[in-house]
Structures are given as structure tokens and as C-alpha cells.
Image (cartoon, rainbow, N blue to C red; front, side, top):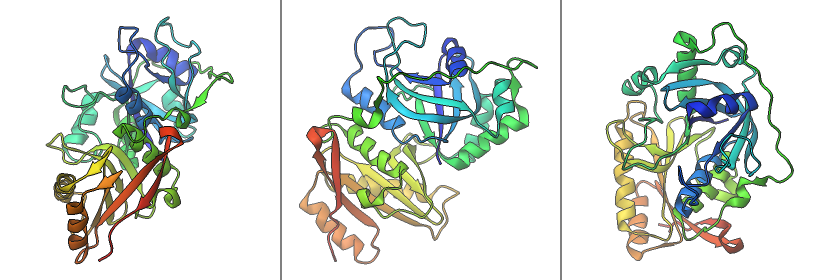
Length: 337
């Protein structure tokens, strides 16, 4: 099971909550210009690991409030049927949700907490997978963020501790939206695998969410949790592409569209050192690194062989685009030593 926090505007929240449908945009905000490939694929990447039953929280941007707890009832899909009042933007990258069966009393009263309460836990290091919910110039603007289940539990605790009721003593209606037969699975919307980094990330995240290690060929912790674009340290904006966490065993994945070289390895080793500084990482915890790309330089193969001789903590994972760039095959090409 996973958990997500989704950002939206105040004026969309009523429709979104009452109909149980969330959508991500297709056009650049305030225009009729279609988002570029990187932006569209980043939306797919962030949604693709979502499964039925996953936990959901909603961040209302202008109010600076967080609402919950909901759960996914239909995995992400693409659909252009009109739902919201906006006549231009259909918000076609969608998923369906409902009040969580264990927390209906929170959802019925639109219970929410102020964002600063969450930031207090982030500052204390109790929230691992978030640094901020704000848009930053040098960081990709993301409307949907996968968070760790431990962080979701902290947020549920906050809601029970000091939530505010937006509508006191008033039950809100829930009239679930059901799409037509025109929907397309988000998996079938992946494109440009081999030409765009977010595309291959989406493929990998799809496999991680389904525990499909026969496809991924990765060494993964037992009962792992994971997050993408994970801030590796609280005080820096450095992020790893994908981080899997387990009990005393963690896995850093760095993804490149084409070639992995010595710089890729140096970067990943730096991220490993930053991860070791986090208070929740044990001194004896094992940290594995996977470098994922279409090809590898001779230098990185040589370095991998040398470093793995005493430690065995680096994997080289090759992906090969298939189905005209809509999918990939993945294999372990780590050199023996």
C-alpha cells in the first residue's frame, strides 16, 4: 500500500471532493498550449504507481490546509469527459477516490489541518519524504507526490490531534463520479521511453508498485516502501530519482535516459553518504545503489567491478525500449568480480 498528497485549488476542491475525482492538467496553466513531453511524462510518472486502496491527502494551495483521509477507488487513467467548470482545461490525467473506510468521520466533516503543523514535523525529521509543498523555481512543480507510509501515519496523527472542521457539524455529500468507456489506462499513455528520463522512471515505478521484480531485476528490501524524487537530506534540495526503504536495507536508484558514466556513479555515492546522515538510517543499514540506463561507459563498468569486490553494493541495470518507445525490457548487467 502507498500514500500520496495531492495539490489543487480551493475552487476545484468542492467538485473534486463531492465527486471523488482528481485531475491533472493537460495545458499550460491559463493557456491552450499543450504541456511539453517532459511535463506530461512527469505527471504520468507521479501517478503511475497509484493502486486501489492507497491513502490520499489533499493540499488546498490557497488555504494552506491538508485534508484527509481518503483512498483510491480507481487507478489513474486518461479521460477528457467534462467534469469541472473549466471549459478549456479537462484535467484528463485522473484517478477516482472515496472517503477511507476507517476515517469516514474525518471526510464527512472535511477535517483538515494547517500546513504549518506538517512543516513542524518535517523540521523535526519525523516526516521523511517531504521538504515543502510549495512551488520552487529550481524544483519541478508536482501536483501529486508519493509519500512514505510512515509519513502518512504521522499525518493521520496530526488530523486526530488538532484538525479543523471547515463545515462544523455538517455532513458533506458524496456522489461518486463514474467514467465512461472512453478512458485509457495510464500505462498505455507512456511514450518516448529511450528519449525521456521521466518515461523510463514511469516504467520502473509501475513495476515497483506491483512488486514485479521478475520484470525489474532489482535487489529490493522485503516489504519495501518507496518514493520518487525523494529529497535525500532535509537541509538540501538534492533528490534521488527513486528510493526504496526496508528494514535495515535501502535502495537508491539513479536513472539516466541514455548513458551512465563516472559522474553518475559519483553522484549516487554522494547521495548514499547523505542518506547515511539521516537519523532514521541505522549505522549497520545496508544501502544498495542501482544505476539505470541504456548503456554504460567502460570506466563505470570497471569501477563497479572494483567497488563490488569488497562490498557488492552497486547494480548496473540496462533498459531496452520496446513497443516503439511505449515500454521497456530491463536486465541486470552488473559485471562479475
